[in-house]
Length: 261
Image (cartoon, rainbow, N blue to C red; front, side):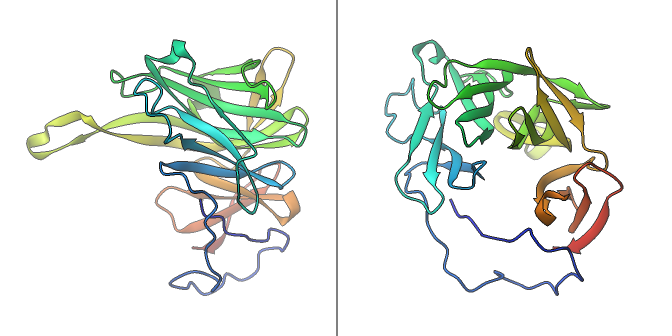
């Protein structure tokens, strides 16, 4: 994993002249030494750690191998402080992944889990948003079973979840589609399947006693990634097939282009 530090405290000014290469001459810092893949790093709510997904290369058993795990690192890297792999025996016929998660400073663990039948599926069979605690991750509560409709958009996938309060969060909502790769003569193969995320918008969630409710952030339709800016007063986001960076107030509004990247 490579983390690049940046400041979100200053307002957007005249966009800087694009440069071909890194914005600084500092050296990259290697944070993980896993022999297999690492995915989707996010900062914890208090900014002291990095939560990320990884494939455990020590799982030599073919039944266990392939499940993605969650791990927590100090923000400067080092030995994992905590990790969790949902590789229970009853999941031997399945593969599971954690594409999005958020860790509160008090141990609240919000995470999105995707499960598919091993070897016989090109799309997830079950996707849920869960609330748990790092001390007992299997003692969990289902907040949402996807797909759901938010506004006028179908949502079947989450990315970049962040806590915004004890019972509130924000995230990128998307719609997952499997796409088979077609070769010569338009022959398609299920052995070559890609993941396509259609649409997208930033949503805010409120956790109630029974479930979580979602509301779109107005003006973020088509978002493919997002981040808070200006000390949380605004949200910046990207869209597909565009080199522009857009901004809306944190409560939503009409998007304006603030930079070309």
